[in-house]
Length: 296
Ligand SMILES: Nc1nc2c(c(=O)[nH]1)N[C@@H](CN(C=O)c1ccc(C(=O)N[C@@H](CCC(=O)O)C(=O)O)cc1)CN2
Image (cartoon, rainbow, N blue to C red; front, side, top):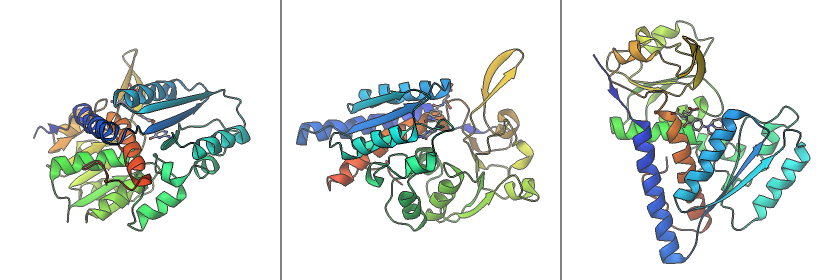
């Protein structure tokens, strides 16, 4: 079998188009513009690239972009003071603090200081609890992107066996909650799971988010499974730097029914869903109808 490629780059462009349409309607009908504030602390090269893309795409969708670049030596108190200012700013409807943060800053404390209604990353403990209990919440961008791709590719997910490899707060746990709310039968597997291949081979949907380059090979898969590869791993091959997923693409594509590539799969959906979450946050804050098809 040769798997169908789920093109995240193309899908993300369509999501951004829908966000832009909604933003244009808000501007034309109400004269308002949603705003997203992104805070970067330090000089992590990958984070700098992601933050630049977030600002550029926010503006391309017609929204207001506020960028804060703070030095590596920024103290926790300084960052908390900036967040308090953004929480109180009526022009800011979404706040995102780029991760990872430097070691002197407690990321959990910082995330939980963001107003939950502006927490477009969906990492605040209140949003995490709301998602887990089936209440309306802000949903983390990467799992939301995976869910939107799965819905488009599979249609109804009800009754399917879903295996999530990885238990991080950012991807694995919220992904499992989202699949559960779609009525999947969900297993969360991780580095200590016994007979991991056997567990994975039961999956109709496999989401790989373990952060280990090409760990999942074709023999982890049921024939025809839908594979969502969340991994973004930089490796050196033949003297060149390459980006690979958590799945070994060629062997998985020969068994799966459909698979996301790396790059060009889940990654682009993360930023598209951040923009979608910003519009959603605006609409919720102003009791307006939410954009269709851009929420969980
Ligand atoms: N506050 C947050 N921090 C981080 C998040 C997050 O969701 N919120 N996620 C990641 C980084 N990230 C966005 O911030 C992100 C990662 C990857 C991509 C992407 O488009 N990847 C491309 C490849 C790009 C490359 O060459 O490096 C792809 O997969 O095709 C976008 C956003 C950690 N921090």
